[in-house]
Image (cartoon, rainbow, N blue to C red; front, side):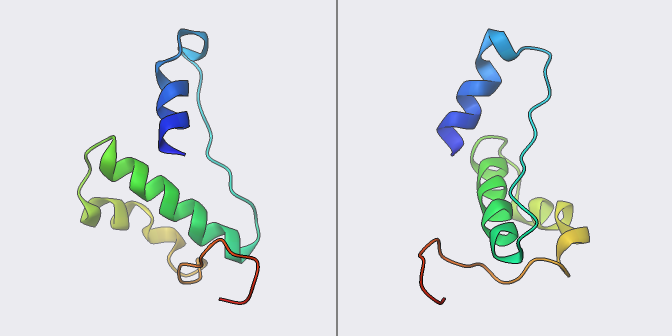
Length: 74
């Protein structure tokens, strides 16, 4: 995920375009989407975890705890 997002960000074809991270309205997908974006923000953008946590603050009440990506019950 991170490599692909960085590749898009540095590709001249996408210069000046906005990239949107959409994960789904399904509750079990929101946690995984937030996790991926949070990792990107910390690893690539070098943000502190506390700042990332605060940026997702308005979503804390609608995101269920982290779920693994397997097909079975978590």
